[in-house]
Length: 202
Figure (tube, rainbow, N blue to C red):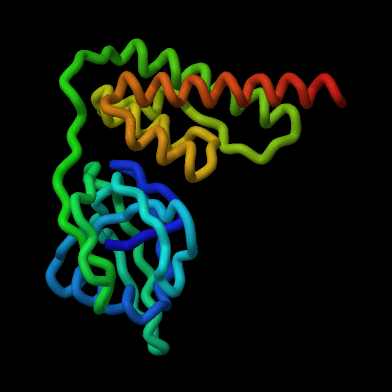
């Protein structure tokens, strides 16, 4: 397990710079045995040194690229695979370990139309924010939706939504894609209101 100060969504990539001894050992094992590891958000505390409070919902991560440096550091590029639920934390020696189970979505139907509705609203927000002087990436909604189903697109939208770690964790813990999209839309509405208020003060 790798507790972090950030949230990883299924399908998203995340670069990691590993220098702490216990996570060097974790990287060595996962690279050697081609094993994934779990990423969870640190809800309170720090990434270095332990003694943190960790979320019980996270994401399984698979190493895509790795590089070991002469001083012992590792550079990893990982990709989120699927949600996990931590049933029990085990000893942190030599690195954090836990008993986990899969955390699949609840059954339910979701249309691509709903995904595109939220995505286009997010795209409009980023265009408006860019025109107001904010440094945000512009989203190509049509390109983002090519070749994916509603669940995968929902996670792509979540990854691109400007939000802090705790809001991202709130998205990750929703029971299904429809609830995640509702959560994202709430965040986008809040950002729209902030942007409008900022414009009024210019």
